[in-house]
Length: 582
Image (cartoon, rainbow, N blue to C red):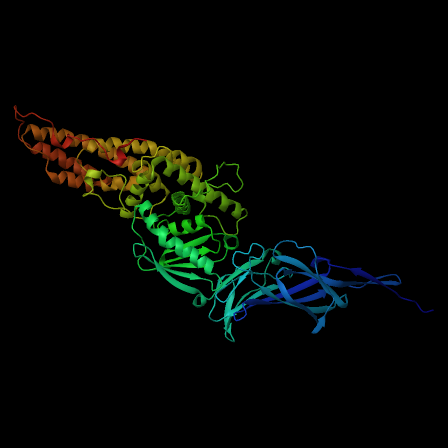
């Protein structure tokens, strides 16, 4: 008797790798500069990892009939090859998942049975949209390319290669790419991608030598080199109009001369939705990048960053908020209506204390929402303060920043004080807003919108220490306070400041006592004591006090006719900014 074997074919379609389909993907995106397109070639090595199963007289032979893969919607010349032979059995899904991607459904030339492997090659051409095309954010021209790159393989079995001509630079590609040069090209590779489903990124590459260049000057003679895409004269004209007419107005509003030595390059880049920013200012390169959209508020915001950037401010939100405030002011001056800041609350999506903005990782969950929140909140804070104090007072703040003027020194002692860094952090900005501009709202705004929970205790100590400082400054009269003390106040080193305030208060009491004895003896304190007081620190304060007492002991007996007020204690009104308590 001969046993018979019944073969049953069990079809399985579009299952995940865990269900028996192993997919290795190798995706190559090549910029073809002469034609202004990206040539895409995706190679998929697909293995059926399932096994035949015998159940009595039946053998189940699982197989796959086909495979689906993502492609971009802006594809042309689509072709598929299986194991080196052209394949016509494919369709593009009629429904579009989003503006950029659709699905390619491929039916194998023959079923892929257990333990068998096949190779698919999908090729197409990606064509860029025209500038400001809302339906196709891909941009590809002779000078600039921005396009999505992805590889639909299994974790650890996917690689993306971006190939550009040797004269091009790859400005953005996630995943720590390794770059080599071969056959006149640069090839950047990201392989062993751990999570291909989340890897889809925008590649940004450029060939600056092919940008269209023109140079213009504003009414003050400041020069600007406008570098636009060769197919976008509209953007170039828009930028020329604004830099020549609005830069002088910005300088007048801010109260500071044009800060750029030499010409400023203004370079066109991709829309902000791809990079997360409408533009960027790079002081060391003397360059502003501005997105392709002809948006007046964005244009003026980025131009304002010529002043409002990290050479003036250590905290991102300060520069961003001020740039938006002054862009809005120019909009109003031009007769337009800028978009005002929106109210904010701690319950808003993406809420973040503004001082925590800089620490956000580019890959943090919720970063996009936090970016939107922080841009608006920084605008709201700065708009509130500027609206309260007025543009003239804001100009005084910027002058103090530009000159490195200390806050905690009397104006009538400017010849005796040291300058501070022209780069201001949030602490100094609050001091300047209150003591130079006279803001009554700034402290509460900083408390509610700016400081992190970790920073809150030092803000809460500030008012009491400043009040004690104002008292000792009043007591000092014509004597300049120790630079160690004013430096501690500038840096918000409250422990050191409180200790030095106590030291100075005690020493000034001794000074007044000795000064009175000197006047009674018909003389005055030597000027050297004031100079030593300014230079003293906590450790040397007792020495100075002893020397004052020794001087008093050396005085002759007091004259019975001597009258008057000791000159060292004849104080003027403490009109310096730090004299305000609170």
